Image 1 (cartoon, rainbow, N blue to C red):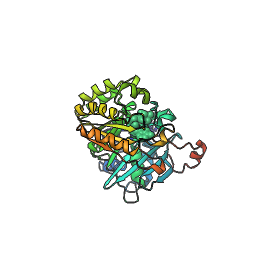
Image 2: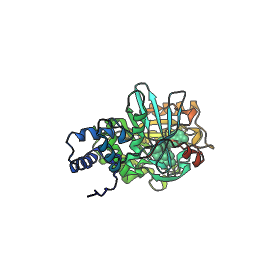
Image 3: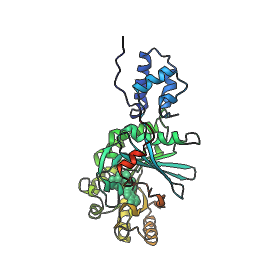
Image 4: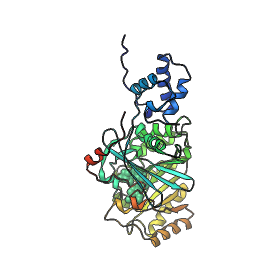
Length: 363
Ligand code: SAH
Ligand code: SF4
């Protein structure tokens, strides 16, 4: 009798516990020995393969059946650029032809991977290149973690997992919460990528109801909130989301958050970099014990805005520090390859060109 094929399951979008249950049941139905589970599961994340065919420790017939039941989605690498400072930008083409970017930032022993959570973004912040492209779609959890998988599979040095992951690529992670929730588990779980929760940062403009969902997670994931302005009026001029989730509500939600938060503040010349605004920012950050990350504006995001001068940036940082606020003026990374984390945008290649470069297969 012919077995009726069950619908294919995207294991990569499941948490390790759910993936384990699925594979376990599937193996048991085939009368496979119990140790197969220990051969199959690590191939998702710990020692990833791009296709089941590559899992050469498994019998060929089983590999074929695994490929039919649990196809492994792959990305095509349509561009890879390396900056003079070592920052690498990866432009991935997804199965449906959409494109996203990830950026790898080496810093001493750290290798921080900046990943995307959506294709584009609906929030239209004035200074952000992703915002200008608008929202196209959410990523599945498997597509979020595939940015790590693809990196590991391509690493000639033997599959190094990044030491840190930041959700600062394309998209607003808290507007894709179910997928980001599962992706956080996969990144952190010892059967997944086993990256410590303190080394995983979710960056958000402050989608208030979903901040609570993140806060409910037991693990110590880090939270970065994109503030960019210490007053509602100025914030509204830079970030349309201020209308829906006003600054006051975001700050009130953060006061409930049991962990230390980081504020992100892009320094824009003549717009949000005055000494008075530094004082107002200190008024907000000090009571929360928040760290302030001062980010130089990447000019690629907004042609009509200018980065703050070095002198104004240093003065802004000094004022915060004088008020007892831990502030760090970041260096811009990957400037020559427009890979400043968080202002990513697929270079406007004609779609056909991206497609013609699609060389990796999608199983
Ligand atoms: N949507 C989320 C996460 C992605 S953006 C958020 O906004 O927090 C990640 C960070 O990059 C944010 O702090 C964002 O404000 C910053 N960013 C966006 N455009 C930028 C630019 N042109 N220069 C510098 N930083 C930018
Ligand atoms: Fe979206 Fe973040 Fe860019 Fe704003 S800064 S448009 S929220 S990706």
